[in-house]
Amino acid sequence: MFTLKEYHLLNERADFQYVASELVKYYGLRSKVKFGTFGKNEGDYDFDNDVIKLRKSYSKVSEFLISVLHEIHHAKQVKKYGKKQFLKKYIQASAMADFDGFDRYNKNKWETKAENWAKQEYNKKWKNKF
Image 1 (tube, rainbow, N blue to C red):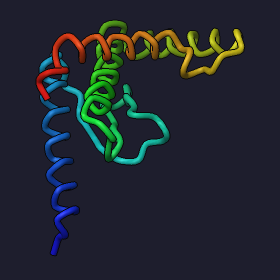
Image 2: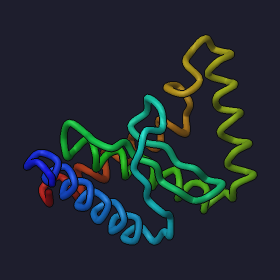
Image 3: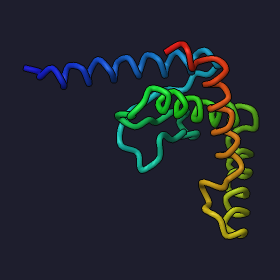
Image 4: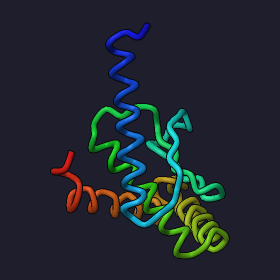
């Protein structure tokens, strides 16, 4: 038997799965969406398997949507450049950030581009829809 809280969480996850999958389709991608514990990040894009990995929960709907959009942008980048070329570019940007004394992830130009695009898309298209 489920408690009301557990039932609500199950429904929320099903809704998040549906919304994330529909956003992936909207942007012309075929990426799979998985929820789980994948580290400290809001999400992750597994470009080898074309899987968008998201946390199990988010404190705000906007945080969830921006995370999905961020990972969608990475999927679009891989689609544009190809896996091998994108990985080369991503690793190079990480190395440059590290060389300049910055965090390899937070100051990676590909992460910055994805985050800026996600926030812009959210504000332009999705902010008032959810």
